[in-house]
Image 1 (cartoon, one colour):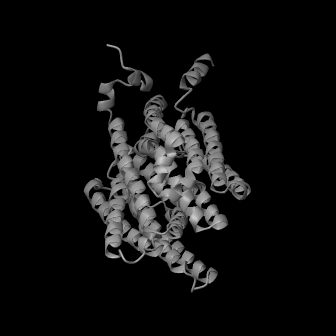
Image 2 (cartoon, helix red, strand yellow):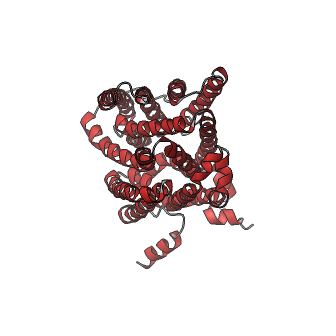
Image 3 (tube, rainbow, N blue to C red):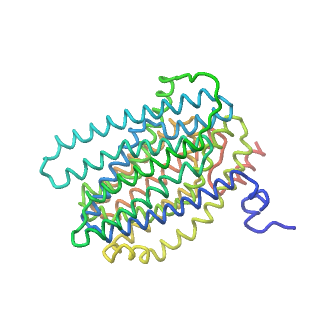
Length: 453
């Protein structure tokens, strides 16, 4: 019996897909990510409806700074620990796993508290105490230790193989809690306009609840066999994880630089408009992030075990499905994006062109495959960091030139140029250094070239 067109495309029978643990993890991650993104968009709509446009823009600006600062707060442990735990578990090195868990938790707590305190002190000396936005930023910076620890513990769970448990707290629990608090606050403070400060306090409560759920999952899943004393290779781990610090900082800065520059150059109202366009375009990466989150530990394990053929086949199959799932959303935003923006309010339709431009960049990234994660899981963090650094410089330079000329559309175009540049570079590096072809198209040409050579 012939396979249907979808099975021919991904190269896997229906029975193989059902029996594959990787396929089940990707399917579960996809469901969680879709649910999480629906909740995220719902929260954005709720915030846009509850908060005045300038307060909504202030909330988006503060959270952008928090997302940037949480990267150095984690000292690169998020991807490093996920990779090292996956490799150590595959080799049965249980003392190594114990040491990694303890060291990363203590390190992240100390570093995140230091960066949070430094950011608050800088803010106090830099901005007058009486400034209306001062307290809002301070509350935002106070969230750093909570968010850093939440993301670290989830990475520990994913590295252990508890892929779904390592996503539920932030994707589902935190967002549901935040939404419930916003609704309760809107009902209780119906006669008073809620501001960004109140929303950030509620965000802190939601993160705390998600952190408690993550602690329960760690207790439930991380059952490490006894035996052997943990060996702490602190300086080696700091040296290796520091590569991820630079890389994570560059990637996060690249994703947030548009919002930050718009906030500086155009004010809070424009920041609110642009942040909605960014959130909309980010929906194109739901399936992509789900697959990458689920498959990252396997990328590390397969590459370390020299199972390159199986690794290549897994990537081709998974990300062709990802591209198929993403394409309808891309078409929706390009041809009917105004319907999506109207949900936030009539004033947000001004972000339509920015949404379309950003959608092209995000879809190009999906078609390029998990090039950055593949390089990271193979120990090539420096190469990834170099490519992303080029992208950040290009994005910043283009933003400074284009925003005065085109407004938020200029910021969107600058971000898209950065995304395309970074993906082209990483696809080339991944193929040249690892022999792995990450784009969803062109694998047959690569195989033909290999067979000829």
